[in-house]
Length: 126
Image 1 (cartoon, helix red, strand yellow):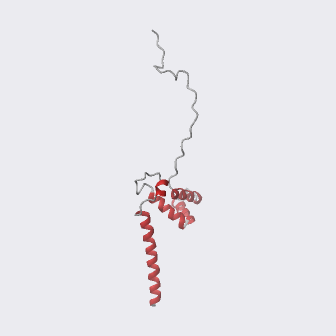
Image 2 (image 1 turned 120 degrees about the horizontal axis):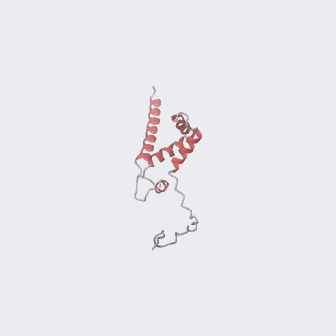
Image 3 (image 1 turned 120 degrees about the vertical axis):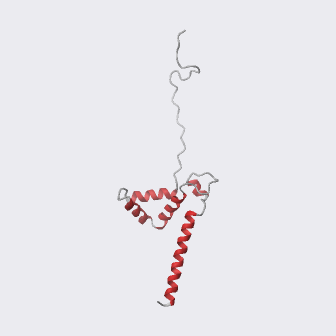
């Protein structure tokens, strides 16, 4: 094989290895950003909240090959979930844990008969 082809091959291989190392380091070594902590509902002092690795892997899958990742996830479930549902699940995991909606104030029902009594709630005969 000529020297120029070997040089090109080794340069391309080095670039792929560098890209893979960069992605792996980002997934497992880099602490969570404030946006990721907020998406995972983690406290401020936590550098690696639970679910960060899964969220980053899902983000990489959705970014690089969303249709292929959804198809692979569907195939891994033996067809129990459709590729559309798998894609939706991947996008949800990639966006982080959804925030629980704030409890809307509900109108209180009027107190039942006898609920406004301060003492014992039974009647006794003297």
